Amino acid sequence: MRSEIVEAVNLIAREKRIDKDELRDILEDIFVTLIKKKYGESDRFDVIVNMDRGDVEIFVEKVVVDHVEDPILQILLEDARKIDPEIEMGEDFVEVVKPEQFGRRLINIAKQTLLQRIREYEKRKIFNEYSNRVGEIIIGDVHQVTRAGYFLVVDKTEMFMPRSEAIPREELRRGDSVRALIKKVIEPDNIEIEEDDDRSRKKRARSGPDIIVSRSDNQFMIRLFEIEVPEIFDGIVEIKKITRKPGERAKIAVESMDKRIDPVGACVGMRGVRIQSVVRELNGEKIDVISYSSEPEIFIMRALTPAKPIRVIMNQDEKLAVAIIPDKDMGLALGRGEVNKELAQRITGWNIELIKESEYYQKSMEEEIDIEEIPGITPSMVSRLKEGDINTVEELKNLGLQGLLEIPGIGQKTAQKILQLLNI
Image 1 (tube, rainbow, N blue to C red):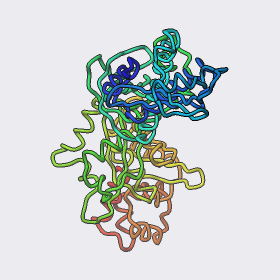
Image 2 (cartoon, one colour):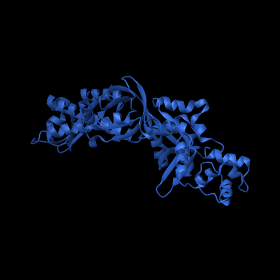
Image 3 (spheres, rainbow, N blue to C red):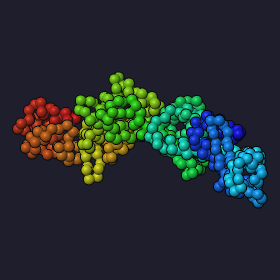
Image 4 (cartoon, rainbow, N blue to C red):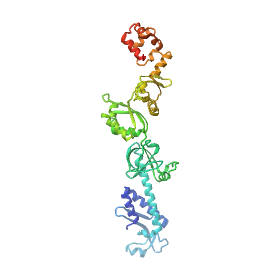
C-alpha cells in the first residue's frame, strides 16, 4: 500500500541527494516507533519499506485461537479461515496492518520525526564529508553579508567566513564568487555559540555543522601557489617558510630540490604571470618570494627584500641582527607601518635592528670599531691593515690615502677601495 510519508521521503531523497537505503532504514525505525506507541510492543510486527514503489507494508503475526484475549496478537480461527481455509488452531497468521489504523495524530508525529532525522542525517553527512576536506580550496558564492562575516554556498552547502578570516579591506558583496580555504569543521553537537550582536549568526550556529573558511590563513596562500606553480605541486620546489599580513604584504621562502631550477623564478613565472595570479586572488597583497638559506646572515639579507642591506652584523647569543641599510632604501626596509621589517623578523626568527649607512659610519667615527666590521672589507685587506698595526676604523680614517699607501701590500687601487668602503 502506498504511503504519503514514503512519497514525501522519495522527493526529499531526490532534492537532497540522500542515499535511499539510509532513508529506508530511517523510515522503518519510525514505523517501528509508531507500532510501539499504538500497540505497546513491536516484536511480532514486521515493516517493509519499498522506496522504488513508494509504499510500505506492515505485517503482524497473530496466533490462531478459539477465544481472543489479546486482539493485537490473537485471531479467531473462523476469522483466519476466511483468508486461509487450511489454517489450524495454534498456527501463526500473518495479517496486514493499514497505516490508517495509526490515526492522524501518530502520522503527524511520524512526519515530524522523519524531518528531524533527515536534518540530523544531513548534518552528519556534511560533517563527515567536509572534515576530510580541511585544507582544501573551495569556490563559493556569497549569499549573505553580516557584521560577523560572510555566508558562502558551495554545492548547496553553507559555509561561514568570519571577518577575522577575511582579507582586511576586501569588501565582498552578495553574488560574488570567491575562493577560500576550508579551515575547520565543527561538529553539530559541539558548536560553541559566539557572543556577538548578530542574531542570524547565533541561529545558524545551532542549525548544523559550522564549516569555517578563510582567505587570510597562511595555508590559503600555500594552496594558491600549489595551483599556480607546477614545481611546487610536484614537490620540486618546496615552500620552507611563509608569513603574511593579509591584504598588505607576505614573504614566502622557497627552496629547489633540483639545482637546475631557480625556485624564485619558478614561483614568479614568465613576466610575473604566476605570482600575479596569486596577487590578484589576494586583493593586491604584495608578495616577496625569496630563496631560503640555512645561513642566518644570508637569509636575513634576503628577507629584507625589497631593500638590499650592505651588511648584517649578528649577535648569536641574543639572536639579534643589525642590518646596515643604504640611506635611500631605509623606507623599503621598514615598509609601511614597518610591516616589511616585522615580516622579515617573523620569517627568520631573529630580532632585526635597522641602521642607516650614514649613521653607521658616523657611529664608527665616534666609537672604536674594529676594521673587521667595515661592510664589504675583504679578509686580505684586514690582514694587511693589521700587519700595519691598524685595528680600528678611527685609526684607519686618520691615515688618509697617503698613510694607506705606506702600508706594505696596499697599492693605489686597494687604498681607494678601502676609503670608498669608509664612505670617504
